[in-house]
Image (tube, rainbow, N blue to C red; front, side):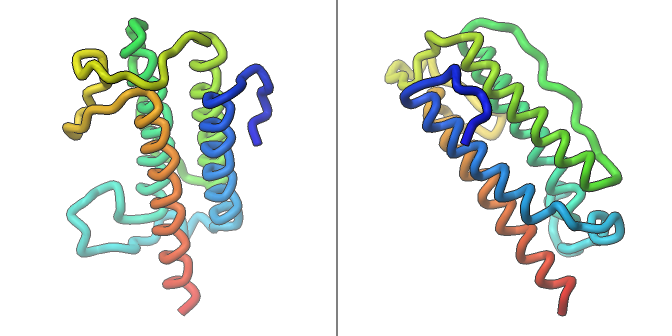
Length: 162
C-alpha cells in the first residue's frame, strides 16, 4: 500500500497496485549478490535491456521514471527523463526503485486534477515505442511492466540455482 495517503479513488488504487508490484520485485531481488546481478542470463537476446538482472533493473527503474515523465508532459509540464543509471549493488537498485515510485506518486499529489481517461486521441500520450495511452492506460502498462520483469528475474534466479 502507498505510504502517501494524499491520493484517493482511482489514483490511490493505481498507485497502491504499482507499489505492490514494485515491492514484490524488491522482495525478489533483495538478496541478489553483485555476481548474480551482473551475470549474463540471456546471451542470445538481441535486447540489451535483458542481458542480465542488472540491465533489467536499469531498464525497469528508468521506465518507472519515464512513465511519470510522459504523464507530466501530457499535462503540459516540460520535464526531462532522468538519466539511466547502471548500478553495481542491489541496494542501489532498491533505493532507485523507491525513488522512482515516490517521484511518480508526487506527480499525482502535485497535480490532483489529472484526467485519467482520455478519449480524444490528440490528447493521449504518444510513446516512443508507438503506443498511444491515456494516463490510466499508461499506469496500467507501468504496473504490468514491473510484473513482467519481476517474473523474468525470478526465472533467472532459478537458472542460478540449477
